[in-house]
Length: 162
Image (cartoon, rainbow, N blue to C red; front, top):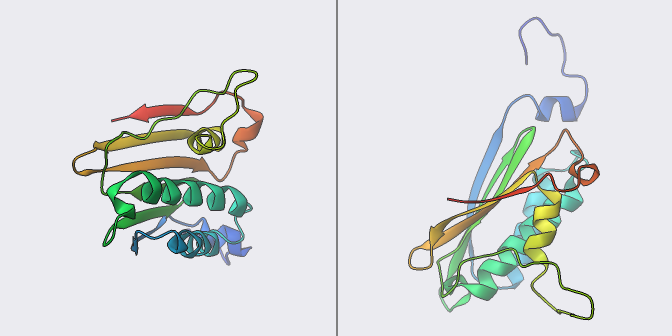
């Protein structure tokens, strides 16, 4: 509570009173995508951004399992979540043969059944980034503004690689 203020107002005011962070590791199995999604949505309940958090966390976790050693027997992936005005949603994998990339929009007549997920994350986020390497693992992260609707600002998202 801020000095000189009496009461919190709403639950959202209280939640936004400071950054809260969580970190968890999950077995690298597809049944864990629902588990991590439910956990993230629960933590962001009342923010008004539950659907975006659900999509972003699900997409990042699914990619970790599908495209890296995290999805192999005994594999795991980690999730970092920070609830603040600029929320941080990240998934760390165990690396693999490729580097996560945002694929370009399909041209007319070109259909893809998959490969659109990170572009969807990019469209929702203020920033999307990757750090790490195929040998040791990657962390793919998205910053999501909880105070501003990015959907109204086409092209605001930046893809960052570090």
